[in-house]
Image (cartoon, rainbow, N blue to C red; front, side, top):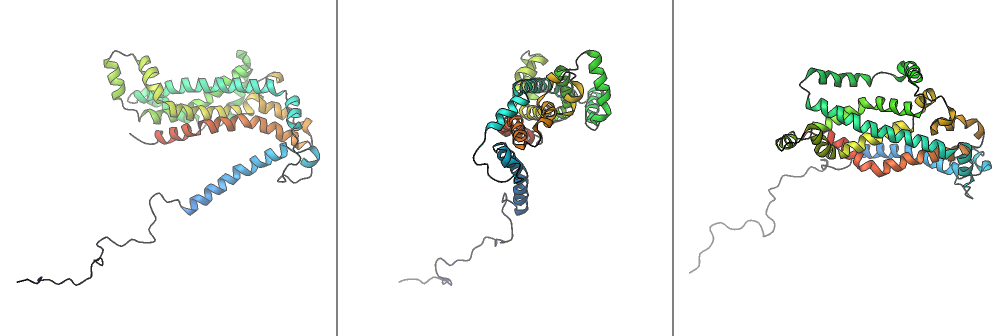
Length: 302
């Protein structure tokens, strides 16, 4: 004898109603790129790429091609003689070496002094002296350079450092405010337990900083270093005001001095600009991942 089920199946197999909530087609996926952001980034990229293309194209043209007024035309046949002429007119090896020495001294000095100052401020924030020192450095960021230009010129002349040495020292000083701000934000994300455990093992403050803190500052060191390098390498006003000997000028100032010799030879001028711009582009391309990592890590509290 068979029994019949008490409840008959009202829907065929495979057609059971879905209990999940309906999906709103207008709802944006998390992480999906915004059209406005994409268009803005494309425009920003064009703002950088177009001048770079014009610089490269003009530097590879002949004098007659560069003077025809069509900057976007492809250079053909290629004319690399512009680089040789610019190399000779600006005495490129000497000015390049001076700029590189000033930029390297600026980067090293900024990294060491800013990291030490930021570490002292971040670990002694409860003390009024360190807290007000931080505010003092922040206030210096809002001080225009023309206000202190004349005193700096007279001071470097009195001290006998109206040379690339004085330029490097002033670059370091002017980079302290922004660099300490970046380092301080990053140091607050480093757990203090690391330092406490090192002190229990007998480490001194200097040993803790150089062996524990400094290696952890790698991403921020790259960020501060690239900003200091770009500011020093591209600076025109400070070297032109401080350095008394024209033979010891940095590359941007030398290019300005010889600008009259370029005349209407735009290909030579753009070749000179491209040679001066190449180091900054290469350095940034090499260190961009550390720059982005340093900025983002310094903005997040661990």
